Image (cartoon, rainbow, N blue to C red; front, side, top):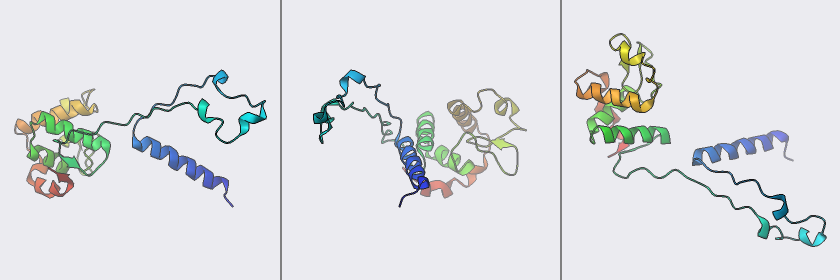
Length: 171
């Protein structure tokens, strides 16, 4: 016998699956005149509602560019990797350095040992104008800053250990 908690778990699982699959558009509300009347018993036969169903349109995210290195992570991580790949003019070294700096490839990364933040662990002591900028948590803005720092020669810890990140990508 199913309990209420079984139904709640099923509902949560279903909603999570829908959210994971991507964005979708719910159908417009059905017009009550387009639904069959329940007053007549003949409308209650199997299949009688088929002519009156509201079609649903699902919109899934487009696949990423095949020329972008594949990362075995989330959609958000993959989106950030593709952007980094594009702005760095396909620099494998930059992508691997980002992974070595912040394994999560997230604009919200924070070092456990020092005041370093973001994709490339920008140190708040050395670069306060970047870390305290109002756009710091805008991931594209932050990625652009990481790229300009990388190509400008700013030393990054991840650069020296980037080879360890190769197993996470398909170039």
